[in-house]
Image (cartoon, rainbow, N blue to C red):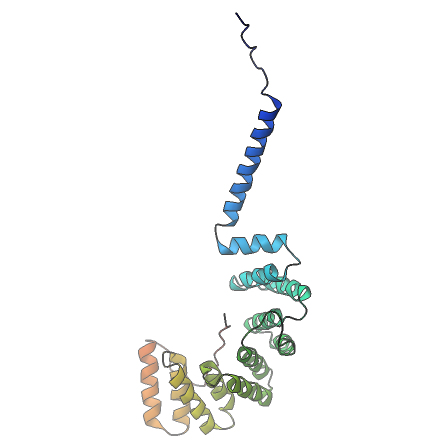
Length: 241
């Protein structure tokens, strides 16, 4: 009879290699599954592994922007700009971040640079860039320049409700009647927005149109119960997607 195999005999070399390969594959699969658990996790993983890719750095920057991790977002978007110097989009997004942080001088610089780069490989709707630049300029005390940028935005897109609302606020201190007309245009384009109605109520009251002021405020309160009654015209800044 053949002798029984000795206890503790080692596995053949090919079996050991196969087991190691399967283990490595399992670990790699597990790690990849964790990466794919959410879009944020995927964008962060790819952004850190591909620092010179325009697309991955832009996605990383937007991910951090949505999480309000401003410094990390700007760092990623700067890398995106270095990877594609002709693109306007990272400059635009950094400008938006600076507005959200209340750093309007920096925002104006970044947004002005974005306008200089139109026709690039990553594009954004032109009216949004001019609008956001106007927001920064108004906060920097450049009222005339802000008005001009808003007028350009509205020439590019006459149905730009946010632009009409903010033009009304920009004009309020200098031409209250033009401001009221711009506000009426905003509510006609976006009647679901309570802030636009509240602004119209304020401006109509200042021009002596009590009926419009009352109706506009009632509509604002209907859309937003408990909304505090406004004392002045309120700008809207909502970063475009």
